[in-house]
Image (cartoon, rainbow, N blue to C red; front, side, top):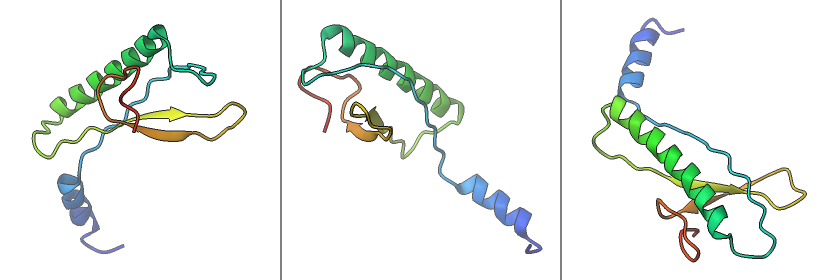
Amino acid sequence: MPAAATVQSAYGSANANVGFTTERPAYVRLAARAPTTEELALLNARLQSALAEVSENLQRAKATSNVAIERYVAIRFRGQTNHLDVPVSADRLGPKNSLR
């Protein structure tokens, strides 16, 4: 271990990017159809809750510049164990928008 390891570690910690991750489960089964109004409301409620938590954490960390919030929906096809992260382009999901 280098003699200045603790100093280098503290310097890196102080100058590193801050990141917050939060997840909210919302189970919706879609069978070759668009989500219903109720399903969209459930997904939007979870999304808004997650965004509120991240915004609160950013305020606590006093993050004021170069802030980027990325939103994803994890989807999985029936019978599969792995999921796909799909970027969401808006703060609210609608019937025809938001999934890129």
